[in-house]
Each structure stands twice: as structure tokens, then as C-alpha cells.
Length: 440
Image (cartoon, rainbow, N blue to C red; front, top):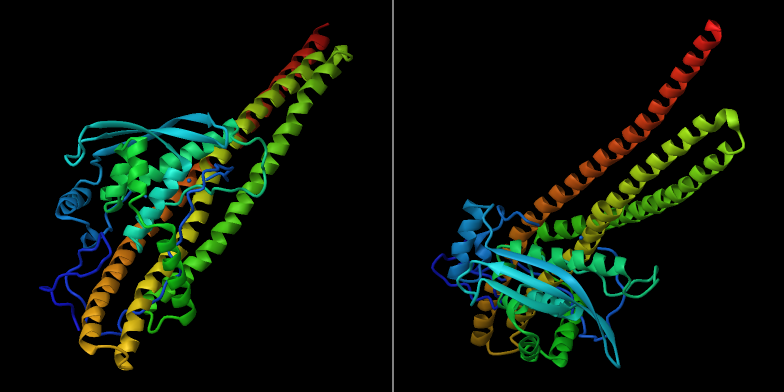
């Protein structure tokens, strides 16, 4: 049965403006896992290295308000127009009697009328980003929220909060906020606006208004129960999507491990190559007839070291973060599918109760209608955001692979040109010496 275009969407999920709902109770079943949440742990800890900007495929069904509909039309008609610019910079260490943590400056510029000013500057710590991510997941359970860098790292626990770690996290947090800003629905989330504009005490006060720990634990227990019970009549497209996500997660994880190994081997090669230059220089001091050739070899090695170091920098900054970000995205996608299942699981439970006549039938019918609406909104939101994410994922990975291929080619061409130039000079010197001997 087609949805009634005149019926309102009764979904409790913010961001859904889908008109109508299906009256077929079993058409859209599913039961997701727990709404995952992170505790506001005050202890900041080490993180792994981590890293969608196109909204053309996004559906207006997911808009949060009439004002966001206007902005959505602008996204579709003028994809290059942006009205929100965010920068994460100036990390600062804070040491107290009980903890050490880093805050980052969040500088925002905007032309949106719903903001009180055109420029804002606040400082946020990692747990504030975690809070924002959790709030976005609660408000938009079937939208793909950009991942944050992990809070913990198993290996590589060198110096806590060293410069490399801080810069890696800063870049990841910068990308996290800008991916939200570029998203046609998430960008208009009220918590996101508060995150960007509220002073520290205001944000703390706003956090206290959210669901408490016991409430979130209740959601988690409910989700686990739904997942154990299972989902009836899950639409085939979401089963296929789940299989795709599982396969994607396995492949991108392997790619991440291989990339990490390649970077390590390249760094080892670079360190070993650096040792050769001084050796040839010392050798030249004891070989009067080979001084120039040996020093020439030293010069070639030094040049190759520089281009190898540049290549390693590109691997570390341009390849590894992008690959690892999509490892985190695969986990995010699994969570989105579980939350979609949870919404459908609620509907399944009500339908079962109606069939078994365990409660007032009229009340159950009203609840079922609302849940049908909610499931339809969740499905539409996920399908639209999935297409958007997939398009951006392919664009990101393609651009990254092409960039690295170009970098590899450039690296080998520069090294080859360096050695060829040296060999040519040596051949010329040998010919010159032979002519001198013949002339004499």
C-alpha cells in the first residue's frame, strides 16, 4: 500500500519529514543494537591516527525543519555554496591536580540567520566531541555520523600528548566537525550549534539537560533484548546493506594494516639509507683517486633520502588517516544498522502484542501507526544517507589512491633522474680522461 500523502509523519526521530506511513505492519521490520554511548570520562588518553562533502544524493525526506528545507534546496542547486566554516586549531595542554587534558580552539564563521553572530570562538576538549557525537546519534539514529578518532590506543603508547599525537587528533577533530557542517541535515542540529557557540559553562549546563546515565543504560538493555529477540521480515535491501558493510569492513581493515606495514617498511628503509651517506664520505677520505665519485654517491643518497622522506610524509598524512577513517566508518555503519533494527524491533513487538491481544487493541493500533511512521522515516533517512556516504567514500578512496600513485611515480622518477645524472657525469669524466691520455 502506498503511503497517504496527506498523512503527517509521526516519527519521533528528529530530522524526518517523510509524509505518510505504510499501513502494512510487517513491511518494515528490524531491531538494532544498543544506542552506543561513551561515558564522559574526564581522563583524556592516547588515540590512534585517524580521517563527505557532497549532498547531491541526499533526500529532502530527512530535513529537520522548513528552514533547513530552504538550505537543502541551496545544497542541491548550488553545491559549492557554503555558509558555515569551522577551524580546529591551537591545541592547549591543561594540567590539574587530578587530570591532564588538551583543549582545542573551535573558530566558526557563518552567514546563517539563526546564529546570533557571524563569528564564534570557543575551546573544547575531546569528551565534548564525544558528547556531540552521542547527541547526534540520539537525534538522528539512522544517519551516518562521522567517526571520531579512538579514545584509546593499544600500541605505540610512547609519550602521552606528544606533538605528533596532538596534531593527528587536531586534524581528525577538524575533519569531524567539517563533515557535520557539510551534511545537509546534521549541520542544522541544535546541539551542533550549541557546541560551536556556547561558552564552557553554558555547554556544561546544556549537557546536564540531556538523558542521564540510567536512561541511556535502559536504552542499551532494551536494544540488547531486541537484538536477541531478532527482527522479523527485515527488508532485503537492508540485509544486503549489512552484508556489504561487513565485507567492506573486512577489506578496509586489511588495507589499513597493509598501509601501516608499508609505512613502517618505508621508514626503516629511509633510516638505513641515511647511514650510507656518511660511509661514502669517510671512504673518500682514504681514496684519493675516488674522492669525486664517492662524494657524488653521497650526494645522490642525500637527494634520495629527501624524496623518500617526502613520500613517507604523504603516506603518513594523506593515505593512513583516510584509510583508517573508513575503518571507523565501517563500525559506524554497523551501529546505524543496529539502531535501525531497534526501531523496527519496537514495531514488531507491538504487532505481536496486537495479534496476541495482550493489551487494549485501540491503543496498540495507534502506537503501531506511529511506529510504522517512525520505521519509514528511519528507512528513508538511512537509504538517502547511505547513497550519499557511498558516493563520498568512493570519491575519497579514489582520490587518495591516485594521489599516492602519483607520489610513488614522482618518487621513483626523482631518484632515477638523480642516479642517471650522476652516471652521465661519470661517463663524461671517463671520456674526458681518455681523450687527455690520447692527446698526451
